Length: 141
Image (cartoon, rainbow, N blue to C red):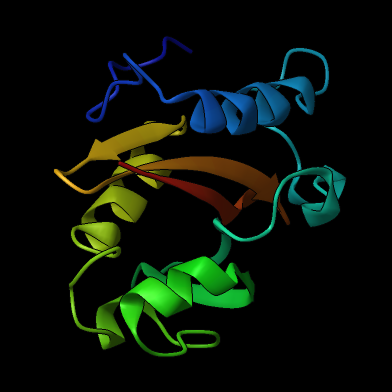
């Protein structure tokens, strides 16, 4: 299978996002395109700016898991754990999150979003025969 061009290229990742991308890459087994979600341990990376999103299909939806960095909720101004991305207001730091989640699943590779105030990396993880989770990390300017 040929990898499609990423709709959100990874050029110019901030150092903290590159650390997350490199860790994600290190978890890939053999010839697989992405790691299995159960190989990821949230404790392996700084927690304050991480998020794990559960992936649902038919229809595609993305739910914030229990792993949502405190800094993310502080900047958002409310708790988001257990909520779907399409249920929250699209404001800093979650602008275009639903679109990026969809693109990450469709591209089957990490995607990168950059705004004037922050950047976000999303990376897919496999489980139960499909992309079952997205790993997200944020960096602020």
